[in-house]
Image (cartoon, rainbow, N blue to C red; front, side):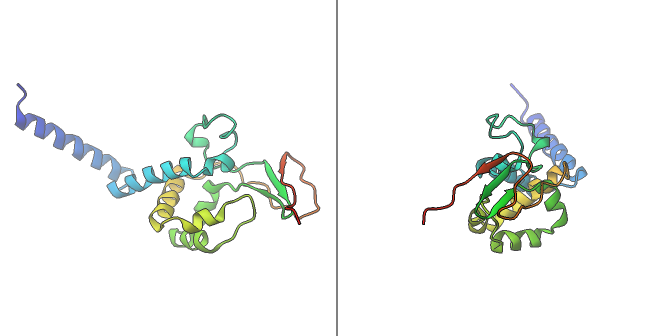
Length: 164
């Protein structure tokens, strides 16, 4: 039969080593939970579908180190042509408070579901921010917005005008 004192000591040692590793990498246990929550939200909220090249086409089989680096695929409609931003670079320019304010107030062009960000809880938005910051900067900036009537040079998904 196992010695209860040895089992307790082993469990405490594992907990201590886990906490020490998190602290060594600048993460508190609550940061680690927020980062994991952000990873989950990015997956289920569809962020990767547009902001990660090849994600939707491969059924999500894109390495995490490639996530959220923006896309050269344009989304064209009456608003012009928009591109999914490189969130890994964007988040490096924003404080958490700026991100929260942007997510609550900014109405972005289609197909970005800005209203989904607006309706998320503060904790969910913080988790997404922390996760993206955890990933760190990578990739290049997405192409710039193109005004209505101008043609994009790369591939686009075309949305028809709404019925009158």
